[in-house]
Length: 114
Length: 113
Image (cartoon, rainbow over all chains, first blue to last red; front, side, top):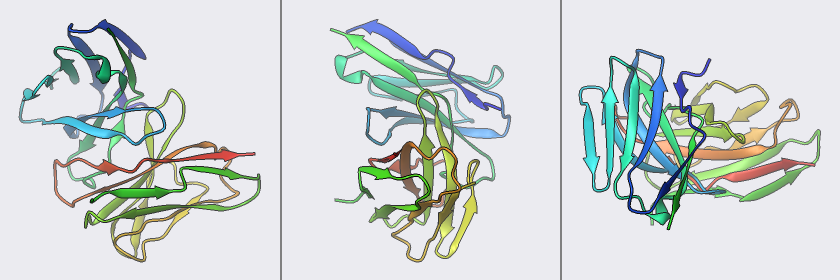
């Protein structure tokens, strides 16, 4: 039972354009959502997060949007840069669970072409 | 520099052997976690610990064991009972506070030969 789904295995964009990565979830108890960036053979690094009491959080070129009614979140990267090429994981944690106990999506491979 | 150190980076094991993966953190985090990543899949939780001498099973604990004798250390043993142990293993830690991120180590690639 995949509670967090990233339905696009890969995304390819041109440098300078917007990258939009999507994530859907099924568990209504999820109240905190995170995006991680991962390079091959390395550990994931935290990128940005959003609490369920918000619908948008921004950090520089990265913005995360949350639509609770649709159980959907997205990560926008503007403008995209070649260094953004990596695997992006969406993750979620539920109310009342252990704090770093995260449920991850399958990941989306982002390729930004110069 | 504060961080999480996993060793070794690459590990080869013969079938039927137990192997222990090391994870050390100097972030003074109370909670530590072990995740497994397989190709085309997200990270799946194996075990986690919120306090010394206590730990809980995650979603895929069968064939694994852990210990938490020190706050800084959370080793993972992959036993011969794990049917498909070849994977990328990631250790993480976090503070015990709601709405916070987990910090990850660089991972250990385990290959069964």
